[in-house]
Length: 258
Image (cartoon, rainbow, N blue to C red; front, top):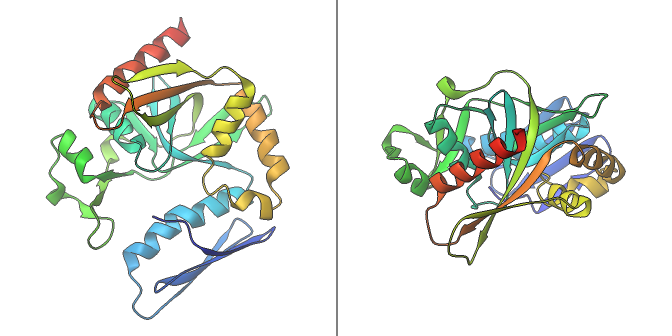
């Protein structure tokens, strides 16, 4: 799903238009108004409601949205962030295959309490997976609904593997495709690099400046960066390494708890 090209951002309202589909208005963190065009595709409208509209609502409520997926491991949430197509949902799905639970896919809603402890709020029990990801897990795409016509990305229900309660965030893993031979991990320890990572993967971060949220975002990400572990996962461009990455993540979590 592409970001809208025509968008107007104010302090309490975000308005954007998707050609041939609809005009969307998000106001005061409570209201979404949709004005569909004559031949609009309901599935495409749904994607923007659950994507850009929800991102705008979270900003208006001063809840930090990150672009990624999060799973629950031993009572704590771990976020996988990265650019589109870098394997966030696929890695999360690998953990579901092992019996862990999903707490959110695509948009991670983060709040901090008075002691700067971050929590992930659950979204809805569904993943969005590409055909190649389904193939990697031996899942039949005919059993799932394409996100919209001619799309090779599918909506995969995960009701049996979903966490319905807010969970404390313990770690953030950035997925990066690189020209390397093997999957590898490195800890991100420098504060400036952590802040850059969080800005880079803030969902719809173009809303920040015009929405008057830059100072709030800097304060929030500074508080967040001091209270969780950060890692960068580097994966080969042309190799399927999702199971290896899952093992690497589990080893990093185990080491951080010792």
